[in-house]
Every structure is written in C-alpha cells, then in structure tokens.
Length: 166
Image 1: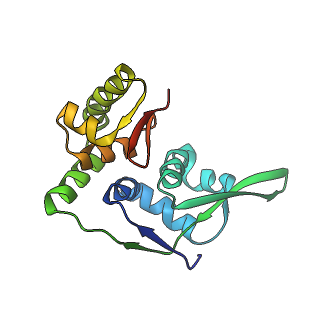
Image 2: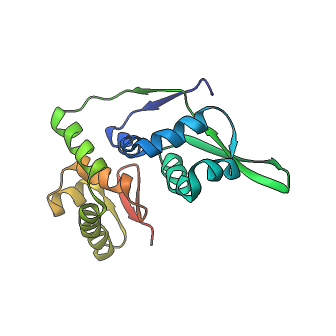
C-alpha cells in the first residue's frame, strides 16, 4: 500500500468517500485492492462482475489507480490504492456535515430528482453557472449543491462553477 496522504480541503470531497464505504461489499473489494496490485480477472474471480461498480466509485473518489500489467494472455488492467491516509483540512458546521452524509447515502431516486433540478437549471442557463447562483435559484444550500454535483456523473464543477457534461 502506498504511504501517501490525501488532503481534503472541501467538505464536499467527503461525498465520494462516504459512498465508497457505504456498503460491506465495497469495503471487501477495497480491502482486496489495498493488498497490492490486483488484476481485473482476479477481482472478477473473487467478486463477480459487481466489482466494476465499486472500482468506478473508488476511482471517482480518487482512492484507486489503474495500470496495465502483463497477464498470461496479454495485457491486463490492474488496480491498487492511491492513498493510505487522509487528512481533512476544513471547517464546517454540523448541519453541513449532516447534509453531506444525507446526500451521500440517499437513494438514487431521491438523488435523481435533486440532480435533475440542477441539470435542468444549468440547461436553461447555458450549461454553466456559479454554484452560489444555482444554490440561490433552487433554494438548495451551497454545500448541498456541491455534494449533489460530486455524486453526479452528468455534472461537475471547476472552481466555483457548476457545469453540465452532456
């Protein structure tokens, strides 16, 4: 396992971490990857095709890196952990942390509704706007907007601007 520390400066960066470790299955797969470089074939043998969604989630959280290695039948994709520790370097209220945890663990149906509102608002406004404007226009807290964007595959933010990827 690498001896690197991930420094988190924005509380919204916790959202992918909360998601990544929200189930025992994700934890099992992460522990296996933490042992050292492991191929897709080995992960599939151990966990079936289900490992792919976990690895995708880990990659979005920046927890896992991939590389091409040599397999018996040619090149194979391998995975390993990116960090052994993390340090949070921010201040926020208990209410903000509660909102982050809630958004991180809420169902896909509830998230789709909230994300859909943001996506539609961005479409109506040229596909890119300041996070504070999105927050004000939709009456969602700023931290809530950032957390929803962090969970989304169709949205992202650069600095203080939310952006539609479609």
